Image (cartoon, rainbow, N blue to C red; front, top):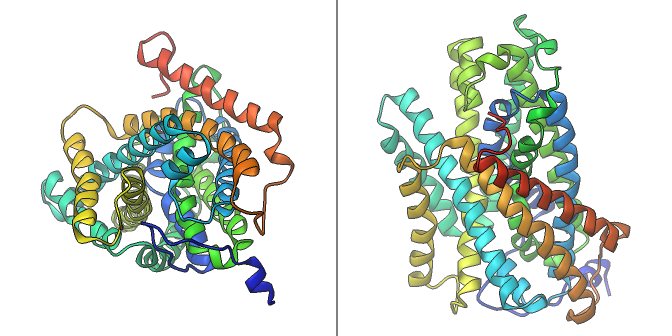
Length: 410
């Protein structure tokens, strides 16, 4: 038997079909999912606390989220039938777990897509001279088309657009530091009174947790590549998340940072940078929309036990659930760009810190098979407890923040 055959996970076809992904398609789905609205709001949300505090939270949130994602990866590799998070949670934790995960997926996905919808509308309104709702429609239509065509289409699109997006981003960051206008000392300050809320935004920026079952579905033919793709994608994400706010705050100073960071870049570097930065922003939001929208669509199929994700009626109904709520909320005036990021990261983070730990513990006892790869020491109970306590404490702060008992970060 070849090494490839040994690594292949036995699969039962269900409502979710299996489409093969390459290593880099999977890794760049992680990058594309993570590098979206969150990276554009990081500088603004951290401007009172300071960049060193942001960097600390990015490291902590990145490590904790990666570990949590690896719990989900092992759980999927112990399960023959391809499932999304609600299906996995129901099997290994129970119906309540499935409902909580589904609520978390929807809250986080809708929070993401509110920020993509409003952010893209603002950018296209500035670039094209249209109204913001029309700009959002111009963005949403091509985004939805890729989601419609499914996992493999998303993987291919992510590989090309994410690669170009990374190059474009590095170009703008380089130009920021070489412009003569940047001063890193503007970003190197700390104010611990505003530190904790920044953690919740950092959690949001590692939103790709929800894509893990999708990646597992695409890499079942090469199971050991799954954790490598996850960690590679998260490492690339962490570097980019740290560099963008450092460049923006160094360039403009904390007092001039805009809610969507690309506008501050344009104001500081000129019209070419405004165009390039906004092109990056649109690519970032587009790639995130593909990953998050596709994940939400298949979660709906899984949660409501539709017969087949490729059935046209099922797909139309699920797509409408993905498109309509974020669009309505984005223009309701109820939720701002950064608030959508903050709230989605906070409460989605709590559920996604607890459930993956419970799932992997149960899957080790009740799974279908021994996987070709499994988590190491970081799946110990003490590690799981630290992650859960950290994320729950951040959510508790957010509750006190909302009712005005603790200081907001922006």
